[in-house]
Amino acid sequence: MKQIPAKMAINEYGYLINATDEIRFPYLWSFYCFHCSCPVELILGQGDQPAHFIHDLEQLTEAAIEICPNIEKPRSA
Image 1 (cartoon, rainbow, N blue to C red):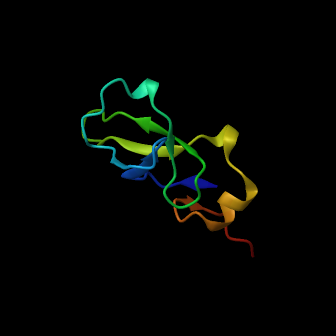
Image 2: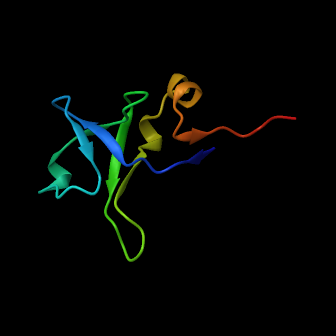
């Protein structure tokens, strides 16, 4: 399973948030995947890599793995 970084997420109040926006005190906020509603973490940009969101693997559900386009499932032969 591979995660695809997401540029957008939903905050705890239902607003769409762009990872590249200036977010004050990001550790105080809760963010959720736009597609599957599972918790995601904000990864701040470093060097050439822009800020992005990735899933919190400890809270990822089986249903989310199946429906979320930001998670690449291994291909079975």
